[in-house]
Structures are given as structure tokens and as C-alpha cells.
Length: 149
Image (cartoon, rainbow, N blue to C red):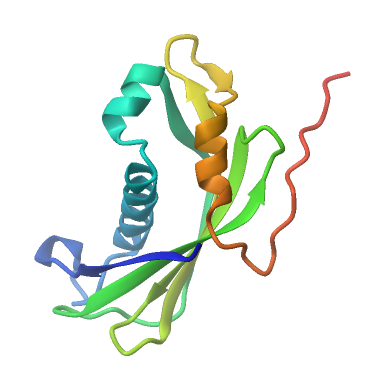
């Protein structure tokens, strides 16, 4: 399924140049991931109960167009990779200006962390299934974990 939401740009999102600050793009992408997980039955309280949480290994942002004050942006998420057990994932977010033009593309590589042991974890099957519902990005490729030698 395609997942996207709209967000109004706030005063706090602006930089001294009068457009959206660089880190705000990533903040909205993170918010969209949390919104998606909540909608799929995994609100923050559920993660606390499970003792796991998402972590990022990489966050790559390409800035394409300025976003200005008082715009409403649309942020979308597509799955670009998933390991067979759902423990690792890649999501591509596209941020659209109010007029529909692409403003930024954010790619994140992440995994699940066992919050008690502070080690990477395999999520419950329902969580891996929820992630797999995201529409596949054109660059989708399964994530194969390298075995330790």
C-alpha cells in the first residue's frame, strides 16, 4: 500500500534563509514512519511493551527544491528493502511541495534494537508483516544479512 501524509510547515521548521531547515525534512520522514507503524497497530507504547525500537544505520537526504513558509508538504514512504525475518529494512521517503514537485528524497537504512540487551533484534512476525505492506520502491531489493565467519 502507498502510505503518505500531509504536514503544514511550522515556524520552528524554518532556517534563517526563510525556507525549511535541512533537518526538518528528516524529522517529517521520521514522523511518517511512526505514524505508519501506529496505524499498523504499533504505537510507541507497544514498542515499550515489546522492549524493541527502531534504529537507523544511515540517513541520506537529497534536497531538490526549497520548501517555503506556510506550505503544506506531503511525505510518502516506500519500502526499498527488507530482510527475510524483517530485522533490517530500507525506506525511501519522498517529500513533495504543495504544488506536487519533489522537494527531497530521504533514504533510511534501519533495524530493530532490543532495548534491554542493547543488541539487534528480530521483530515479531506481525511487525515484519506491517512493514512489508508498504508499496515497493523501484529500487527494492531483499536485504541479505552476511553471516559471521
